[in-house]
Image (tube, rainbow, N blue to C red; front, top):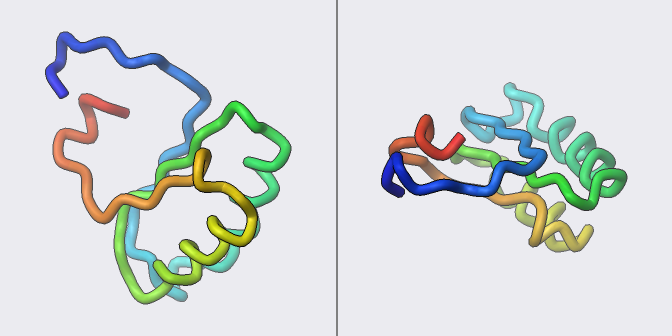
Amino acid sequence: MKPEEKIKRENWIVTVGRLTYQKGIDYLAEVAKEVLRQNKDWKWFILGDGEEREKLETVIQENGLEEQLFLKVSCRKCGMVF
């Protein structure tokens, strides 16, 4: 994405970190479900990877959050997007 490109600003939550048990990803999954269920126009981006990734993918699928909760392994130039 070029800096001059305009992106629509919405209600975004961005989480960056390793997706591991020690980071409390199980709590993140529960919170994300509730926040996004109550705020249908919000988007949540999770940037990172780890052994808890599959758990988050399952939460996304089981709760129909595919249009709101996004997992990305990495993000180059994140500052230009977020």
